[in-house]
Length: 111
Image 1 (cartoon, one colour):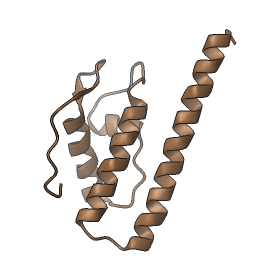
Image 2: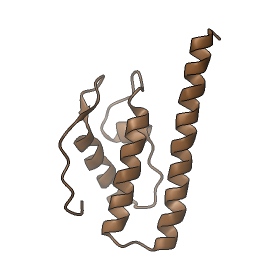
Image 3: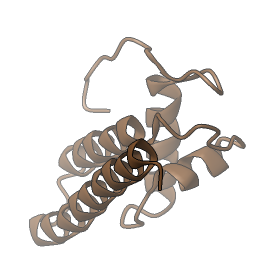
């Protein structure tokens, strides 16, 4: 991935998954179809894991975004397609964060 070096960091303590494993899986998925929309559940499925508490999913979304950006930058993909794709991905990221906040608020209020 464009010469970037990452130190492995535990992202999912329920499944003992590192960010390197997640990045590698995302890259493999992008190699198959570089324009697919990748979400945490899809990454976990590809790793033959499943989200348990799903507290790691916001971090996984961040890893998906950064890995996808680096992937397309390294391949000098058509800028217009990348911009549209990244907008969709960032919209998904924001929707997930909003959903988590709403879920936490519901739990905190006892609903």
